[in-house]
Length: 355
Image (tube, rainbow, N blue to C red):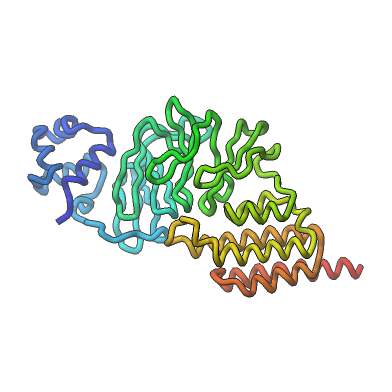
């Protein structure tokens, strides 16, 4: 038997209705709605049909019980004729939510942000109702004083939000505050889902920036003049920061320090050490860990290849190809495509030197 009462209660709360308001719309007493929600009485089929129409769900929603955990890759967002969204599990053929939301942000962490609202400014901040839905379809309502930004939780279960009268901060999936409150916007880097770093901007073009990790710790306190300019000019400092905080920091390493064989070898050794040992200390979503590792490795190798393009050291290209051939998790097709690109760089470099 499914928990029809709890589903009615969740739907009622999702639409901001009191028991009295729902009773009035259903032409029943407040006590009847209370009995339904407490499962002391079950609505008859006619009442359930009316509830489904009123609360914008199908009648099946009340009878299907989702005891299975959905996987991230099976989830999709479905929009109905009224332009309302729901999360649908394609593999299990079940809706995790009803069609009541105006915007949904699905996350690899297994916690999805669903909101009923409209954008209030160019920063895509959403007001009114926000729910957090997990991979079992359980719904948690967020206090109206908390405004979660447009971006989803990252792989570590962290996102940025604004709390009225306090400011911006990072929160985890349990809505615990991880950072001090800032009056300036907390934004993410361009690979939000794959890593745990955020940039605090005093404004878009000027001011001091702080690079934060998913624990809310400050990694770099003074950033460059634009958000994604390199700021690390020492290979040993870069290796230490990456080892402690994640491979995405390689994007903040100045390519000039990767122009020598020794510096590239240090980075390649770091990749082996980091991904084979230290990755186990990261509380990234378990279902996503192998994919996450694969993506992070490719990012590191791509950045090294970009540095080689600048300096044309053929020996370094051979080192990267050798290491790339010997790492796990990266799918063979992706690996071969990337190696092919490196071989093209190598051939072009040889040709240019011959000329």
